[in-house]
Length: 107
Image (cartoon, rainbow, N blue to C red; front, side):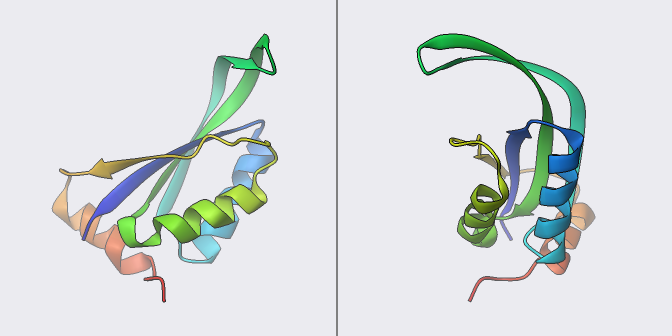
């Protein structure tokens, strides 16, 4: 089983909860934690922007990434959402097994 940590920022807690409930409800993620209180500074349309955001920490498996990405993109309010995935090469084995057991494989 190859677990992933997917990061995505959203504009507020309400959006974070909507996305989390959808991804969990579709068994595309085992757990989604979110961190409020982030400030992101970025270049957008030729200007430096500064926004308050919420960071989603999405735990899933590699086999589900494309479906998760498509679903996350459809739910996301940004034109170009941050969707970044990291392989989890090491971790607590029972936790990684739990991620595998509560997510579904793509068909």
